[in-house]
Length: 495
Image (tube, one colour):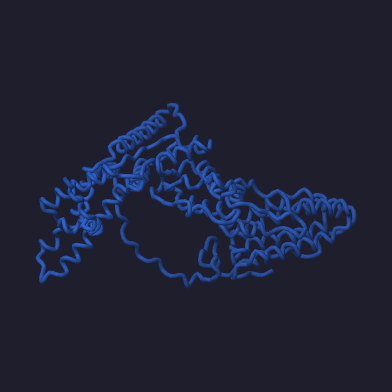
């Protein structure tokens, strides 16, 4: 094995591991010791070694693929998920020699062979193999491998086993010019330190909004009075908890994960984005970003891939809020083998592992969301705060429309305002399951300015006022007018 600059394939890792371990096993003459070696090498001890190297060099999604490739022919194929490997790495207690290694030492003392010394070299090569799966071996990874090899060598020395050749020089396997964590090298490129570009001057960071500014932005949203009150109550609860902690008073456990229930277009995403910033402003979250996904952003089409995909989303959301729209789509009552359940299980574990710096908000229609939460005890225990987003009234829809006009630089005369107010009231009163609330308002606004553009483009040298004016003609749906015109009038009754 040598220093590499191209990532190995999983098949290549499996082949090298199988050949190296099988070759060593054939050297063991004692049947009982050979059986112990065969039984343990692909099990717990080898799993510990495999957990150690990504801990030294940084765990990435590719390590899952390679972890599952390290087995010998005829043995069970590993099927570890990303979160399982991540948990094993996080809980790794430090290198412990495998149980069979003491058997190798005892055998060598009795027979004068040098199996234990030879295994140190084989073991070292296997660790370096796993360290090199991303195309490089960093100094930090090599240092860890060296420490593990030294631990085994020390046991051989303590037992008085002779050594007739120098051990492997692990530094010879370090990829030239690579420092631990060098991302360019991990993508297969060797970058000499002298060739590294000078850091570019960064623009001055914008000052983060204060809590007062964020609350003012929340208050400026149209409607949502109950939601605004719930948000402020939640903020007060968090503030008082912090004060109690500072006063050494008991603080009962509390979940800050939320369920947003309501129809589309009622401001759920907008409020979630503000909440992420508010949580950051009061010290609950370290960053305050919002990561928005739906089922397609969490669920993959193959076993094991959904957990990996969900874990990657969780990693992006750490320090902020993970917002899952239409979360009830993760459960499928028609297909018990649906991968959505795998996403839920990975999500629940991520919420537990990162409970101090991750908040999850699930959102969707009211009744499906209630069914979704109550169908899973894990979800029900973590999501116990509900925000209800009511439909906007006709007057509120009109106010949202006026706000869009004001921001876009459009004006309405009095007849047009009266027409809009009546139209939005009619839209509200006749709403059905397809009612889009503010989304419908935005669609009407965008269709209106498109018609206005067609109308104004036909004018010769339009004035500023004409460029800004939206009229009843612009806002009327021509298809509805056409349908009404095609409807024949009712004949008067014949006397």
